Image 1 (cartoon, rainbow, N blue to C red):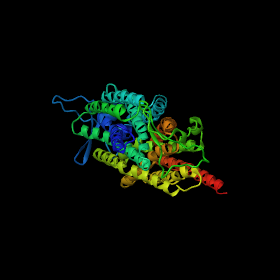
Image 2: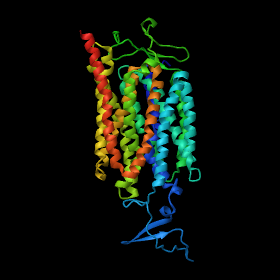
Image 3: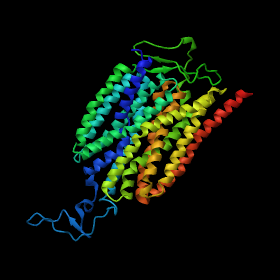
Length: 501
């Protein structure tokens, strides 16, 4: 097989799509998983005795509080207790327990942070050892994580911490290593990036299948054991489709150089087993140093932009179950809305490619720019700004604490999430050398992971003062991310003016 052959690049893209949708972003299906964990009674022992020893039973129009620790009579029927109703009960919903919610929020906080740190670590491994070694390690880590979640129980609840962290860190590795396949599609590279990011969104559906299976009688343990076994299929791509090292592209790094690319085409080569398909070596320029790229203001602002917007996304995702419990009237409604949230996020399969296509369309408007810097950066300005606008809109709508606005929040979340990660990866893939993508993507995610750990403080703030104050704070914070597209616009304009005189 010749990997640059159009007959096979579609096969690679389809296989990569299936890998990402199956295993890439399982951590984003936390809303479905936490529903199952709560239903199983995980961490219920953290609740004060009065929170779970007392049961409120509705009989006709009256309410009877029964204490399950009271002595039963000879017929085995418990005697009604005269104690007051359990504290910590939500008036609209089933019994709640703040201590249990806090612990499960901590699981997601640590898991999402380790998801980002894992991306950084695997980015380092990818940069030093290449694609194959990276994917083998990721496959092992993912399987271990899946097994830990499978065997999480009320007896060993702490297994959920490393389990969620490992499947998160390993999962994003498959997005990172497959992203290079977009280089095989010179004119549609950003669309392919969008499709892969859409698959990453839609992988929340894997967790939904676990939830639906649980409600249908298939245990969480069985579902995760099946997931661990099927993950071995990723080794097919590792050994037969992807190169041992990287798919590379030529990179024109001199801002004053005149590029000879047409319609965004890039030279592609495979560095597997010493067999290369590459342009004339005399035409290929040396890449700029990694450090010079990492300390560029464009990259620094991109990291800040993604970190703040991702914190907004993570907080909404982590607090979704609690928010639904506060707004809805019953456990059945919470379950239904949790499912519908996942269905909407699965639609990222369609919105992320649209985000990629929108980005690709911007390139056409600036292809005739005098400055290569303007040709590279200006296409990112509008998509970056639109992502921030979507986040602000979502944050504003969520301030209306009514059940009727939930769907509007979900729709904004869908487009916001699609643009956020499509542009997060797309800008790096388009501007920087492919050899640097893994490590720069990883560094971006470890910084954003550290920032995302502040969500635990936000959870505590929300528990103490309510979600309204926290959401107002996040809304104001979102406006600061406009600095990224504004700087790219200013730098592009300055570079174009310099060549116009």
